[in-house]
Length: 345
Image (cartoon, rainbow, N blue to C red; front, side, top):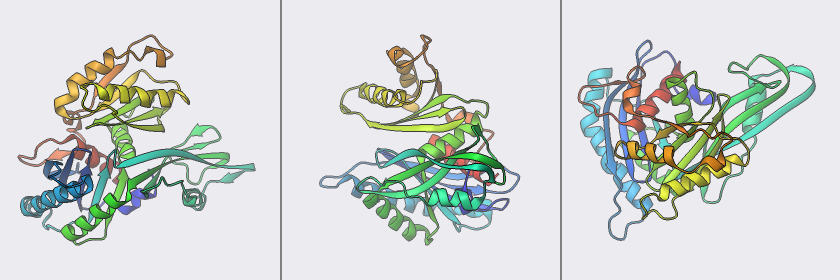
């Protein structure tokens, strides 16, 4: 990963509050990490976002987060104390999903006539170049998802020599009023300024790389409520992210139309791989998988073969994350825990 990893302690014990804000629910948990051990999720809970009469969506998110946070402190802190020896939180990691957040991938290029050493200073200069911020949104974070030196993707690129460097940067933008409401709420709950927002697409990309390290070409399809985010991983690199909201959420399969719109946007730049990794709630997982497999997407593909859809489920995380006693499995929080573990390695 990148400089984002420096926000967390490496090779040390740390307690992290995990918060995932989606279109229809919010999840919260406490994670204890210690060198040499899988991260331990000591507490997890998820609450639906249900606006009351006269309440807007941001108000509903803030109220739900407040109630969920009180439960974290009341029920989760004693469990964290038992596992870590202290109930104090070092950092709060927040993942905000669509439609509250959108992500974009851009490329910054450095090219010279003679080979040069790619240094952290050059990397930071590339990161310092401002991404165009959509109206009403706030730049939450920027993460380097890949570096290509002289045409070859290189994981440990710093210190290497090259004539051409392409840096793939994923920028995350969050609804500004919502991000301010979340941050204010979390500062009050945990009495800390160490609150870090992360792009859901980047988080999922890194988590899937940990789960399936040999996969190089695939689509990540994240369905929650009426929002869909489709990300393309090409040659192991996160290359494109597209968002869509179902125009007809009242229709049973309105999400399928939204998914097709994201795929059409991706095919304007890249061919589609055959493999899909589906990330969605447990109740919809089997039916969504079947519908993608049977969907008429042949016209968007170079191959006549039907798509291969792999449903991402909590059972796949047993080697990545340990659940505490009686802690319910939660796909969103386990993806976050896997992402954090990868940062700290």
